[in-house]
Image 1: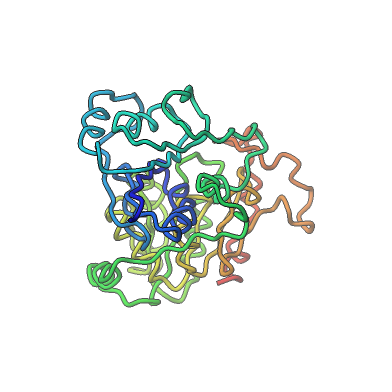
Image 2: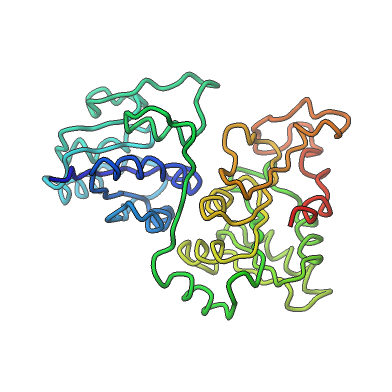
Length: 334
């Protein structure tokens, strides 16, 4: 008889992608997987073949939302033998506890002693392993470092997304200029526009509604000289559609963002531009990914002693780590 397991998903797209090897490991030993996820990450789990069911949790960012979590837990009572809690927050562990799931696995986290009964010690600040290994450790298995996330589109998803945009597979590039964390992770809009103007195929700009301003700026600059070359879809697609378009693209260029990890998990050729963050911790895990990070470029002078600063905005006011990555450099890898 299969073990029925509930996985409580992280709330960020990139982190959700990083949990795929955990799903694969759990499914390989016979666990039937249901994922509870917030609506903005649920599409990532619909692209994981080992996940049997995705339940969208109707919760908002912030706040414990006790009543809503209790109500959700009531609907899940008696359905599961085990739960794996990926986030470290107290609220993420409430549903498995209230649902009466007998085995509840997660990191020690935020005051969760009574909520979890199988706890892993949280690595100290600065010593956390790469995120894939961090999440895969919840399985209790060894040999986690070699895992790479892999996603697979549901049947018909690519055809539907391409038809909606009148596109052909491999007939366009995707640029993802956003990075929700802050401007110190965003390659300049003018650089994205210069790159888009030099590409031989049409360009799609993908992102959330929060990226609408920068994407509109890029599209306007490109289309003023080459009408129709650049299509701004920021905030105009569902995440399911955006995932399908990325999977169907000839190549993608992005900042260090959740969509970067989506492209890597589909094996799409990509260039990932890093600024304030570090590819040593959250790189795109794909043999077809090129990472550009001036911190580890010995030819770049003067050296970037300030990187990685992990700041939302450049503390020194110059953002050299991004400004000095030229569009021609990115183009050379496409």
